[in-house]
Image (cartoon, rainbow over all chains, first blue to last red; front, side):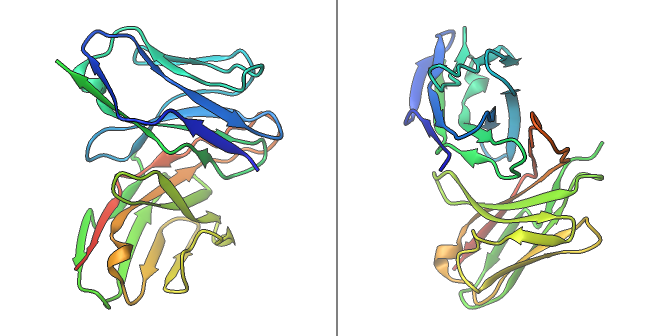
Length: 112
Length: 118
């Protein structure tokens, strides 16, 4: 079945460092891909999404490109801030399938 | 507009008691989902509603768990005879589903209910 694999955390970086959180997937069809973020004490928020190959989702300085050839959707940010500290979840949905398939989440800690 | 709301935000209960958790989805969203998130863990799917019906209850961990949705809107998750392992954050999400190829069922989450069973 479909699955999503994220890099294990926690990931600890200094402020202004470059961020990459890896996400790879397996799917039978052509899924849509998502990154969700969960700030401490809050619910999940959609950060960005991409619905077809080579699409780039972007929001709040974060970017992720849908790479069909490598079945990946890595999250990147050029210069992180302390306020980016959160747990990041990668997820996919197959067309016509209601259910999101979730990665385990990656905790990001940014130190000043 | 208003987002997904959940109540209560925190619930402490004694082992063996029943609890009800409420979710009020975004107006117009036909799909509603319940998840459980244990401390430091990912999301565990519990149940999905399309309108008032629940085509997928496969994630409910035991028969102590049940959920209903009325009027295609508010949903209640009930846990009977709570156990300590039920302690977790219970998240509700809703989505506006449009069918067909290329549809993306992005889900909008509520803030969650933190349940502690003592």
